[in-house]
Image (tube, rainbow, N blue to C red; front, side, top):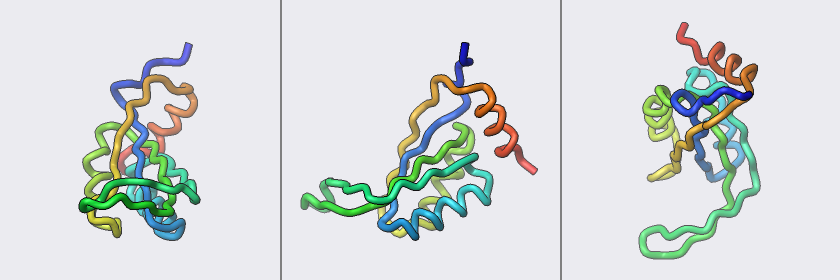
Length: 112
C-alpha cells in the first residue's frame, strides 16, 4: 500500500511566457530548495480572460513538486521573479505517493 501523503506534499502548477523563463524559474526554485523537482513542459496554449478581454498565449507549464509548508516561500519567490503581473500559483494536494519518491523529496527538501 502506498502511504497517504495528503498532509505534507503538494504539486504546484504555474506557467511562464517562454521555455527560457520557465527554465530560469525552475532552476531558482530548486536551488533555493523550495521544490524537489520542477518539470517544464513547453508548448502549452492558454485561453483566459484578462482585463476584460479574452486572450490566448503560448506558455510553458511548470509542475513543481514540493511540500505544503514551503508553499508560501515558493509563492514569494515566484511573485518576485516572475514576469507576469499575476502569476499562476495553484497547489494541488498529493494524496498518495511512492514511498521511495517521497523519501527522496524529504531528503532534498531538508534545510541545511
